[in-house]
Every structure is written in C-alpha cells, then in structure tokens.
Image 1 (cartoon, each protein chain N blue to C red):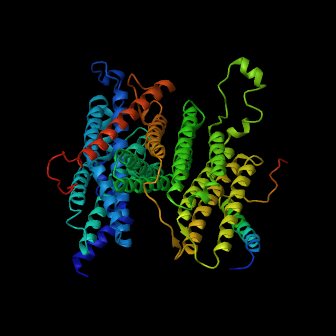
Image 2: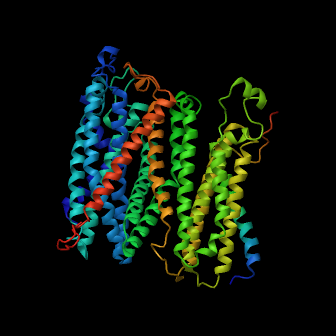
Image 3: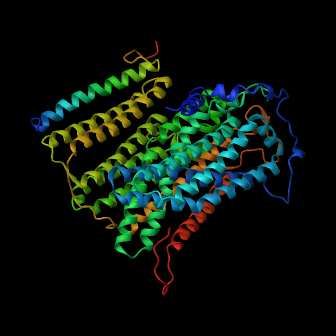
Length: 588
Length: 42
C-alpha cells in the first residue's frame, strides 16, 4: 500500500470513529459567550400581509418531500444496479436507470425550493438564522460544498450510465453512485442536526451562549433518533413515489411488453416501500422515547395534549397505507398460475389488517357533549375504551406488519415449487413460527393490561422483536427451503387496472403522513424557536387549530402531488417521439 | 422428509415457545423488569 493511501485511510478512520478530534480541536476560539438573541415582536418583518409561518412551513415541507425523494431513490437505484451485476439480468440495470431518470427531473426542483426556504427564513426570521449560523458556523459552508458535490456526482452517475455499463467500468459507475449516496446521506444528517438542535439544543448554556463545539451541537440528544427515522422513512417514501410513477406508466402504456416492465417496476417499488415501512414504527417509538427522555413536557404535548388527536389521523393514514399495499399484493397473486391456491388465505389476512386498523384508530379519550357522556355512562366506552391504550395499539400494529409480510410471502411462494425432501416439514416449522410468534405478540399485549405502566411499556419491546423474529426466521427458512425450487412463470402485466390505483394511494398517503408528522415534531417546540433557549415572539408563535393545521398540510400535499404529476409527465414526454419523424434510439 | 408433519409441527411449537420465552425474558430483564415477580400491590 502506498503511503498516501495509508494517510487517506487513517484520516477517514479518524473522521469516522473519533469525529470529536477532527471537528472539535480548532473550535475553541469560536466560542460566543453572549446568549441567544431575544427579538421582540417588532423585530419580525411583516411584508404585504404574508403569513411568515405558513410560507416557511410550506417551503420547508415541500423541500423535505423533494429532498427525501431525491435522497432515497439513488440509495435503492445503486442497490438495484448491484442486483443487475450479481444476477447478470439487464432488467435490473434498466430499472435502476429509470429510477434515476425520475430523480433527475425532481432534483432541480429540490434545489429551487431549498433556495426559497432559505430566503424566506432569512427575510422573516433573521435573528433566528443569525444565531443558528453562529452555532453551526463552518458546517453551513460544508453543507453548501456537499450540495455542490452531490450535484456533480448525481449528473456524472446518471449521464455515465451507458459509458460505464460493462465489465470493470460498471464497478467505477457503482463507486460514483456510492459517493453520491454518501454525500446525500451526509447532507441529510447535517440538516437533521439543525432541526434536532432546535428541539434539544446542546453545546450551549441555558441562556444560549455557545460553550461547546459544532460537533457537540450536532450530536444533540434527538439527532440520531431523527437520523434513523428519516433514513427509513425516505426509503419507504422514495419507493412509494416511484411506485406511483410505475402505475402511471402502466396505465398509460398500450404495448404489453412495456406494460409488463412497469408492472414489475411497480411490484419492486412497492416491495421497497414496504421494506422501509416495516421497521419505521419501531424507529418512531425510539424517537418518541428519546423525546420523552429529553423533556417529559414535550412528550406530553405530543401524545397527551393538543397534538394527540393528530395521532388518530396518523393511524388512519398508516392503516390506509397497509390496506393499499396489501390489496396490491393480493391483486398480484393473479400474475402466477398457482396464485389462486393462495388466494383463499387473503380473507383471513384482510380480517387482521382491517381489525388492526380499527383498533389503531380507536381513541382513548373521546370528545363528547354532556349528553353523550350521560348516555355512555362515562368518558370512556365500556367495551371499546380498553382498545384506546398502547398495549392494544402495539399489538394491532405488530400483527398488521406480520400479516403484511405474509402477503409478500404468499406471492413469493406462488411462483416457486420447493424441491427439497423436507418441504412439508419446513412448512410446518414456518407455520409454528407464525403461531407462536403471533401468540407471543398478543400475550405481551394482554400482559400490558395486568401489569404496572413500566412493564406495559417494557412489554412493547418483545412484541417488536417477535415481529422481526417471524419475518427474519421465515426469510431464512424460505431461503433454504426454496433452494433450487422449480420456478413458475410470472405473467408480469397480468394485473387489473384498479390495482394500480393502490400504488397511487401509497405516495398520497405517505406525503400526507409526512406532512402531518413533521408538523407535530416541529410544533413540539410550542412557542420556542430553540426549545427553552430562544423564544419565538413573532405574531404567529402559537400552535394553530387542528383545522388550520390540517388545511395547510393538505394544501402542501396537493401542491407536492401536482409537482409529482408534472415530473411523471415530463419523464413520459422525454420518451415520446413525434409521428412521422425518424425513430431514434431512446436517448434517455 | 423429517417424519410425520404433525410431529414436526408439535416439536417446532415447543422449540419456538422456548425461543420466544428466552427472548421475552432476556429483553425484560435487560430493561430491569424481572418476570415472574408478584406484581400485585402489597
């Protein structure tokens, strides 16, 4: 190994494993011992009656939607590209490229909206931005630098696809993709540091005077829970959006070969969306647990205060996602000739998914009139009341996840006939795993009703682990049992048109959900710009009514969906050749 | 074939019960919540 390589490796190792050494060493001189600014109401510019909060809110949310999408797609594009190398199947490569093509159309919009967000923050919240710049100092410049690097690697990655398609060159191409993803993730982690710092500030004293390094402010208590949550959510979101694209193209195409391609793309996208979605509730629990650990007041504002009702809407949206994803999977059984054999199980899965959905949306405390309380005999319903607390909801969500996985497994098995001698016994081992695992999930839920709160909360962890054990155990057993299995033909394209609308439901519900949950997370700061450190004295420093919040989130969601339809249309336009002109090779 | 499939099923149920019991017990104890204790108020 050359000495220069050794030094580079050592530098990377230090930066990865001891970032304090790199980031904190030269920061001592940058201490600012004055507190955070205390702007009065008059310090907030009022321009042409524009609602500063709604403008910044819309810009931030729109930027996040687009950024989540353009960050996630290259992640699974490179994974799909890698699949093409491993399997030697060019279809994976073509699909990875098509994923990237949609990203390219959305990338400039991401930057545009990001610029709009920055401007609206600088114009309407200059004191806050001034303080944030003091806290994060050079990191903001690094962010700008990385953004430039991401643009360069993104363009090189996409436009070099054909030039670096075969042999060793393919590995160069994937290396560029790896750099692109590393830079993209770093950008997200940096932006998350700023967001989470506003919720759980670190590296400053109670008055806001900067006492620590940039790294201390970065690794604040909520940084990593937010990193994990956003990372998984982005994968699920990106999958859902490209699934919507595949459905759009499936419905628009007339050629059966192309229809088959987009059906396959839709299936893969749905798979990616659910893959990211399955562990998401657990990441969400971790984030909420850390919020409670950091500030009980903040946790109670979220789960027990004005924002608690939004969690019921969250349950409705997640239930919608589960139902849509499962419906799509059940429809997919018609792609295989043996699918009908498995269709008989669908009704049982549907009962569990719908039942879980109903349990999840059952509120604990009802908003009732005096008359209704009298008729009900109290504020809680005698039979349904117990379903309003967490043990019931944890049980419901875990069962929904297990049965969603089962829908995947049924489709996967419908196109494979095992040839190993122990196939029947193997099936029994899998069935026993499901039976015991589900019993354990239900048992841990019931245990929560007969034990003190601390046990109730503690018992939710074995439920999560049971779900993961069922999924991972089944996958491992299937890998061995279906080794060398006889493959049945999958008739890609043999799907109903209505099943494609389930793929449209997913991105809409995901977008709405992200807008809603992002609003909750941000509102936890109540009337603080930076929680307990810098007060928000602007005219709009209150939590809006649920109606106002709902309307704003819905308007942003509709705006984003309009942008996505435009992006899909652009992608299709790029492939359209005018009649009568010489047919050219599709350059995109 | 490992034997009668129902025998395999019964054995698998017992094995999985053991696995899940071990998982539950170790997770609860890691959280400082010993199982099999009398939780009724004294």
